[in-house]
Amino acid sequence: MTIRVRQVAAACALGAALTACGAPSVPRASRPAPSAPSAAVSRPPTLAPGPAGLTPVFKNGPRVGGKTVALTFDADMTADEGPRAAKGEHFDNPQLISTLRTLKVPATVFMTGRWADEYPAEARAIGRDPQFEIANHSYSHYAFTGDCYGLPTVAPDRMKADVERAYTAFKKAGVPNAMPYFRFPGGCYDRQALKTLSAVGVTAVQWDVVSGDAFATDSDAVAQQVLDGVRPGSVVVMHCTRSAAPATERAVRMVVPELRKKGYRFVKVSELIGATGRHR
Image (cartoon, rainbow, N blue to C red):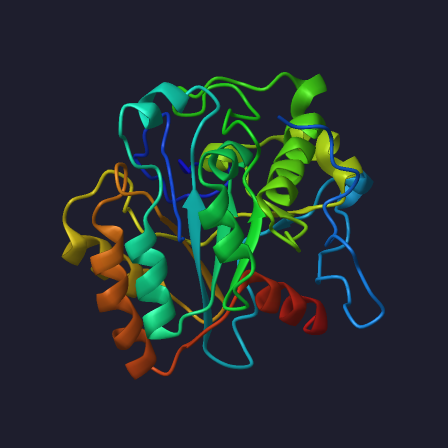
């Protein structure tokens, strides 16, 4: 995932086609709710629609009630990057997923549908691991606004279909319960995009801490930027891509013990959203 939020002050120099994460076609999906729900499984927490019914936007959890932090990882692959993958470029990062498992760090992976199509076994392994949750990062990783890091754009009348197509790709890969959360490619959105996606029923998830790991090679600098930015309830945006974010796995190994020393507990985005609802 590349990153950008027009409303967020912290700018991050991300590239136009940032890419993604892992561990060892498509008709439309009806809804982003967990597939095959049962009486024993409740729907994940979401935020109420915003003014005029716009898609709600979540940036961080409560600043009170305990030191929690959510690490999120964008598993990016744009719709036109298949030839690069065929030539051997790695848009996944199994070592990062393995490190998170070893460190017992829950995490939310914002995955593109194109990535799930390319790495179905890895998508399935992540999606079936209770330590992780998979959320939607669009199918194509094309921008939902203009002027977003040079990304191609999705036409307004195709935005809803692009999000739904990603959920279908997850289901096809064997992901049982993709979350009703959506991260805009590049973090770029406007009122029109929020209005268009209101029919999908997702909560848009942004962040309040930019790790700076996109295309970074200095793991120490990435780790320090995260440590300097985290506050209770923070959402940290990182990437899970060997080719586009090679420093991330080592940075995580530095960040996790330091935050634990400071009393932080790692949670998934769903827990922060649920806590936000309770603190309103």
